Image (cartoon, rainbow, N blue to C red; front, side, top):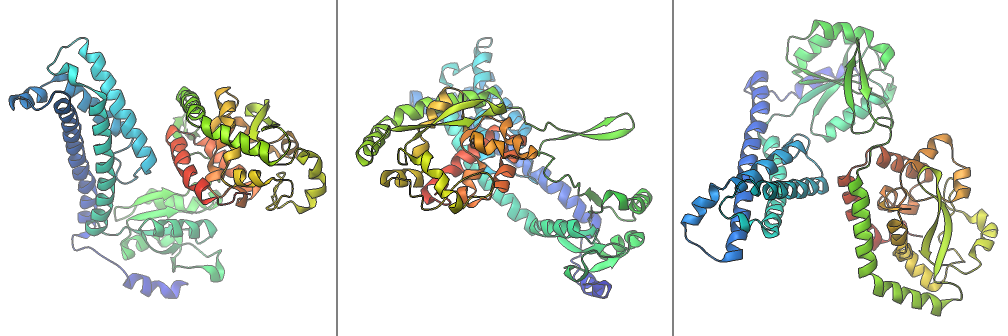
Length: 485
């Protein structure tokens, strides 16, 4: 498309009868109204949860009990602290909703901390029904809040699409970055009317109208009634744009800069003002909470206890199927280059390591890794174990010893690390894991360089919610056996 397509784009305007100021007012009022309703319902659900827990504990009581319960300072502490924590964790940011594993984590942690706060507060203030605060009340509150917030997020999205007019945008920069920005905006529900640029780097690949040069940006904003400008120009081309933005526009618009930092910038960063310049502040390796280690240790010990019968059955099957030990130990490289012996159930012949030299030419993996689909070294039982990742279960022992984590990059061999490029060494900045983004994204079907990028993304953006999401996604990944060979 080119300048000749401008009438087509102009003809597709979806102006609201309320006008631009009316649209802006609707956008401001709708989230505020919805959040107010959500907070009120959250408070009511928490109150009802603990009231129900008290009834279940002691049986139906006098109706006046409800009035006494509503005036309890302990219940007020639980409701107030829980809602404050839910807000601090971003659960009321309706424009940027959290993924449901993160929502669940936010709800569980907020209600739990609020309950503990009430218990501590009860030491100083003795309120009615102090003995009724129980785990049952917390559990009911968590379930009801989880169901409600899933429904609320979907309801708000549907209501927003119905009431709020579609946001119109112009992408400044008819280049590859601009085309990617236009595609992403369209996926988010924006109506991208076209590009503003002095020329196009896309030539015949341009997919939207080229509306006009940057010098006419103010006119384009007015003519096409846009709400947002997305700047996708390289740094050396922003001088002219700076002058246009300094003058401002005759219409209220938002400006977004498409910062091109590649994969360097993590999700969590700050913009700080130092001296006369803005700086982007972030940690290249996300700080890991001690909660991760406690969670790993508790779940690993529980897993070893519960899975003990499966360990015994697999051990017997391995010994009956082929000669050799039950477990296979291999030297792997862990966090910061520390080496350790990783445990697995033996899935191959006893002389598998000696036979690998004759199979190098059949390697199907990219990079320094070695994998082939029909490895002749694997045993009958081993093929089943590998298909469903059962051979990895003994690594729970490595987790207990602190050498591995439940979630993290897969530990490489020493031979693989020797072939790493400098940027690939970054995946050794975290404790290796039994599962990770690579496993839930296709395992062996993911090329090596993409596997490293997934690991670096995890290391830069670690959160307990991300760990929970990966663990939950691991279950269908294992059951479907996608990429397992």
